[in-house]
Length: 132
Length: 132
Image (cartoon, rainbow over all chains, first blue to last red):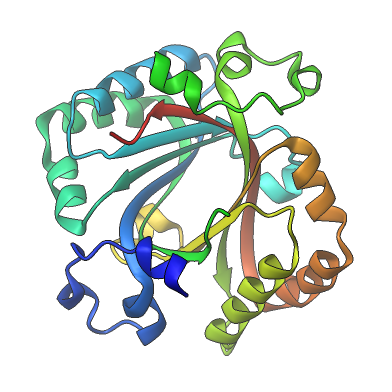
């Protein structure tokens, strides 16, 4: 239990989630902004990812950023999605700041034009198993 | 650049991804198993999540596990998906071991029955911005 508590920052705004289940309130810490996408045919994906890395490097509100390309999946499981982009923020306020940042807004416009489909989820990260 | 390299473990099997772009090969380290789901109506989501936490606690191959419930999203962005489950493995071999573990296979069967839809992606995690 101790390990879990150490991973939870106190900076999250509880009141935003007052209607949520206790489980979430109890364990929340960082906030994640997750996008899974399928790019349009002909898009230079490498360039798009370079642009995203540049964008997050320019915005301090983004604590960390990890991305990946699916390597395993049968279509039945991936539903045609191929790439994952996950940004981590120390608080909901940081995520809000990021979403409104002009650098992000400009990048989003180019990004939107390049994707065939997307699912976007924002969530307080609950640590179900901490790294040993 | 130094910071990035420190985050990349050498345990990944390069040959599996020999056909992939150099960018991925260069920076890969941990492997992630990501599921985004929408549960069927009437499912006891809390119980399901407890079951998942128990399952990952019983399988050493799972290095860490984070989950969350979307809090922001308009339907247009979430596509109706509500929950994210993300497990991290130190290597592709660990993920393969997890997928074949009888405890995981048994849980997956119950989990599959509880979900209306799912997207499952496995990917080597590329660190685009390391935590400061």
